[in-house]
Amino acid sequence: MSNKGYTKLSNDPSSSDTFIHDTFHKQATIVRDQDEDLEAVGDTLHTIRNMSHRIGEELDEQSEMLDDLGHAMMNTESRLDNVMKKIAKISKLDDDNKQCLKMLRLIVFITASIAVVAANLEADPSGYVAFCPCMGRFGNQVEQFLGALSFAKQLNRTLILPPFISYPHTKPQAQMTPFADIFEVSEISKYHRVIQMDKFMRELSPTIWPKEKRLAFCWQPRKSIYDETAPPSCVEFIRDEYHGPIGDGYDLGRTAARKEWQTKYPSHKFPVLSFVSAPAPFPIRAEDRPLQKYLKWKPRIMNKAIKFVKENLSRPFIGVHLRNNLDWENVCKALHEGHKMPQLFASPQCLGYHNELGILTPQICEPPPELILQEIEDIVGAIGGKSVFVASDRDHMITLINNKLIKRGVKAFKYDSDEPYIDLAILTLSDHFIGNCVSTFTSFVSRAREFGSRKDLKDTSFFGYQPIEKRKIEL
Image (tube, rainbow, N blue to C red; front, side):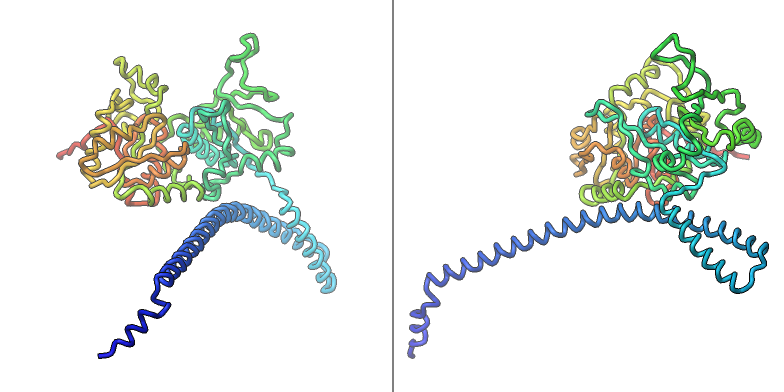
């Protein structure tokens, strides 16, 4: 049998080593080009995602501005309509004049709309409430904010939204973060009228609250910490106003209390009730806790929290808050020394407002590491937990927790950046949350879970606290 064909094939240049080498080289070049193209596509997608995120934030801000504009234009149109009806009745205009009136109305309406766009904001005739969230850190400030929101609602005054104050370890001075950078203002507005502080100061204060008319509302006079010879006062406003003699103070649950505030401080004489601290009790009252549902994170915060959960935490995951900074030792010191304290800070969240659910112990205030580790392991076992997220102001105990759970194949994680808002959002998303009963940071999470819309994310417990079993009453 002839093998000419095979001889020809073997002698063909295309089967040579050079050809094979060239072919592999071309393929390698093609693969490298494809990798570069894919990398470029990846960079483009990353850029698009960042742009989408920024566009989303801008759309949120524009949406709020459009809502304000829409309400203002509707009010303007309604007032113009009433004015034109009155003019028509008085003048008894004929058809031609009515057409002219329509044109005039259109011109006036357009002019008024332009004025609205130019931020000609109308003042609330019922007045305003302003306050400084100057007590403690974010958890304390939120508790007092919710109380102030309730206070403004009951007095029927618009609440001026203050900035939140933070105290970064890396910076010498406190930082102010606008309310609207953290929470959705539109959600708060579903409960009661509010206005951002910068908008109020820029557009309304020059006319209704100029510098020469600003009073500082205090509970009672207090001595200056800078000059002991100075007369007792609050701050350097033009005058201090002491409202302490008002019965029930900030508790406006009774009609008589509201009437006393409104009688003593009518809005036409006192357009702004400006408090040097929140017009609300601390800790938060039980009836104000449900207001937490109106605190909705801005997309910037919630999106980061959701992304972290998806990329790092297998469900079901346990959220843990550890309050163990150096200052906390002093908070719990009296309990460790044997002193009895019915309540401390946010402890009513687990003990009840009248200690009907338990008594305060040193272990509840400052749980020891071994108790923390054991309770985390117990919850992991109870719900079949797959991961743990830890938020802390100092020691996250990540290594200790991982060693405790190593046999279960469960790992603990923390958010690397110092962003407490994102920590709170992640804790709220946990399948089971364990916190510190005394801490207001924990209280934020427990309220958000109790009154939030997610029915599957409600389970909450507290380190060192065992709920009192409900006794069966036999009749």
